[in-house]
Length: 158
Image: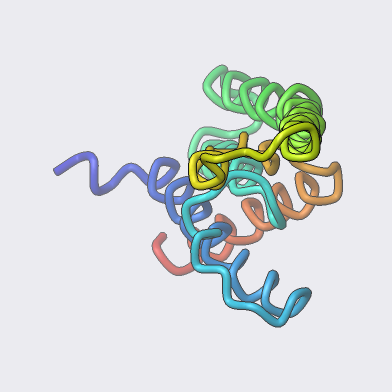
């Protein structure tokens, strides 16, 4: 039953869920299409990773103080996660975009050189996921969301 009283854990999990959910209406505002697959996808606005690690750090700060070792661990962990989201993962998404374009161009070349009798197979190929990382603004708003949600939850729960 102690697990249900772990405020930092629940704040972080709530921040993940809320950030993933809010991606759907935000995408609708931008595209006028409901994309429910965003509930379980990576990337996009806001960053649920950033929301989670900042919610975790904020909740730990509220419970143990800014001078605690456990807050230091959570804060450094959060910095690494957010740095990775804007660096390695974002660039992996750029690479996936280029690779997908190369595959598409190659397939068009094959079609032009000779008729491609098995077009259904090329339509069935899976493209690499391009939306992997985050723009810095997405990480910023994810972090802000995590902090705000945790402060609100702390007032409600504690």
